[in-house]
Every structure is written in C-alpha cells, then in structure tokens.
Image (cartoon, rainbow, N blue to C red; front, side, top):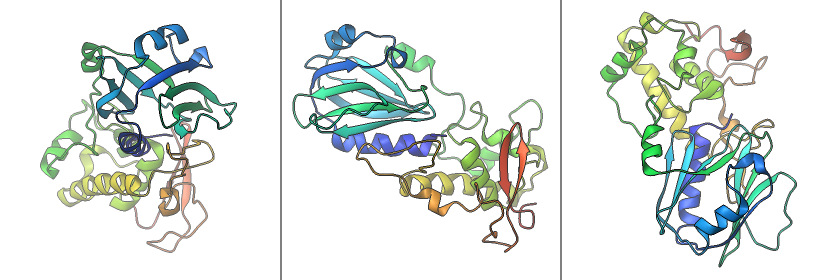
Length: 275
C-alpha cells in the first residue's frame, strides 16, 4: 500500500538531498531486487553524478545521471529508500546500497520483496507510461473527468474505477476509501449513476485527498513500512476518516464506521453519509 503520495514524498525529498551526488560504489545485497549484478551497476554508475531531475512515473522513480544512465526504482508494497551515513549499521532488510563520494549514501530496504531497481532506456520509459491519469500531476476540468468516468466500455463500481490503474494511477484501496468518504459516495455506486454535482465532488475529493496525503508526508502503516528517506514516518494516517476505523464514530454522521469485503479486501465507509 505504498501509493503515489508516498512515492511523491520520496521523490521530493531525494530531489533535495541527493541531486549532484556522485556515486562511489554500489553494492547489491539481494539478487531479488535487481537483474543487474554488483559489477554491472558499478561499471555503469561509478563516478556518475545524479543530474537533471528525479521524476515520478506512476509508482516508479526515475533517477538520471550525467553519463546518460537512467535508473528506475520501484518501492513495491513495502520498500523504502533511506539516506544514511556510511558508518550506520546496515539493517537486515537492506537490499541495495549506493555510496556517494561525499555525504553518506542511499539504501533501499524492502520488507515485502517487491522493490525493484533496473536501468531503462528513454524508449523503455516511454513504453511504460501508465495509461491512467495521475491526479498529482494532471489538471482536469470536472467535465473532462466526467468523460473519463464513462471511458470504460462498461459501467464500473466507483471503488473499482478509483483503483484501476488504467483509469487513475496510484490511488489504491486506502486512498479510494478516503476519497469516497470525502465525496459522500458509496463504493458500490456505478460510474454512470453520478449526477453533475456528484462528479464534481468526486474529482475534488480525489485531488484534495492525494495532495493532503503528500502534505502530511504519506501514510505509514504497520503493513506498508513507509518511511521517508530522512527516516521520518508519514502522518496522514492520523487524518484518515474511515480507513481501518471500523467501529469508531464517523466524523460526519457520528454513527459507527462499517467495513465490508470488496474483491477480497476490506472496504471502510459511513453508511449514513455515503450514498
């Protein structure tokens, strides 16, 4: 459950902390994290400087170097990047270490074996552009969003629409529940059932929830292990209205939040205020 807000937090922090750092050595501690050997990574990155900008493509980070190499980093469901001094103890979950010539290094930790690091060509980057919109980077009018709701060949449940990467990138179950609560809509409403004001509320909720999640540095939960490169946990979980709050009182209706199984996973919502 590391979604686009968490990856965006990492991107912004890396852009502040590691730009213009030069690579001294790379060490692969687990072959599961990359198809490249330690020798290949060092051959291609030794003395290379992180240059240009660090970008986010959906849930993938792209880090460019002054020798035209491009490194793609995916955190998966339980990975995180840490800026640490070279002398600091290497934790058991560490999968890859990039040591800079100055000011420590960058370590990739992975608690769920889903993180990946690999080189990409510019052509491969273009081929992997996510088909869905990225609300953190895309400005849409509510009418354009209304058209997007009708893009799937068949009407969909709203939660399926929000968590479908072919339509929207990087929302996931957690943020979908928060978005639908903010919009006052049930997860099992169909995409073709919304009126104009409901469409507006939904789009506004998508933008507000994701931007607020970035503002509060993401959501750190027991099962996503999210920590920013500086070692700080996110705090947006303290602002969740419904997600994993079943039994607690809804901040809108003051009735207990309920949960139901949806596609094998829990969905959290307020029966009184979501229609």
